[in-house]
Image 1 (cartoon, rainbow, N blue to C red):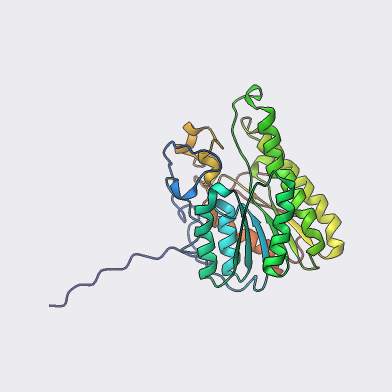
Image 2: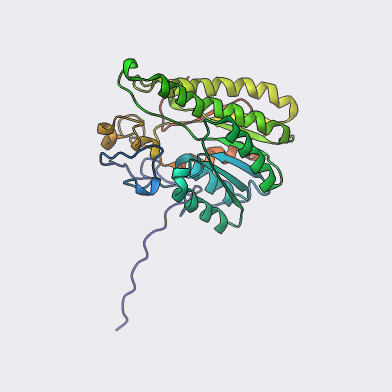
Length: 309
């Protein structure tokens, strides 16, 4: 008698596979959990999906040289994986405490046949931001894509509990670092280069317990639109991605009220679930690719159906 063969488990769909978007990724109900900032993604429950097993490249960024902040995990890590599989070399910025996560992303990049340059440091230090750009240019032989993803988000129930130090650190991480990096990168960016910044749904509908974070995202959106007008005469495009609720290490490092984690994203989006970082990466690929050549000063909202202006 012929021994029956096991039916292989269905493969996860890649970004080109059609299907019901509501069930493409699971509705998660994370247990209450907390880590010290900046958090280690590999220790989260569940671990976010960055597209390691699903993102399929088609050569859309062949030969590009990208600097990505927050590239060790979350949306930044997913973008690094996607860019590498599309043919780009990557310089990764991240906090030194996130080394283990960064090594994981670097391994994925190298398996895609691209180079990964790891540059740990503190984005609130302007000297680090400028040295980061110099290292990226030296390591990759140039620079033509700057992607600012890294961010700081810490919830505080009231304005009285929002300290001067936290307010300053949030702006330094989210806004000042972007300014320092872009300013340092400009002399190296040729026509055809792209800058992609990361805002948030919070820029439009600020949560009352995230006043500092939400206001930085409004600033990033505004700064990017003005910068886009300034740089397009030089052939450099600037655009923005504005994510909705996305399961990343920000959520388990006091980014939101820890007690709300089991319902994270499920009641906020029309889709009834939070996004996984893998779902954000294609938006960044599009804005970095030649396919978006007539897209300038745009904010691409990837938020599961939440209304924005």
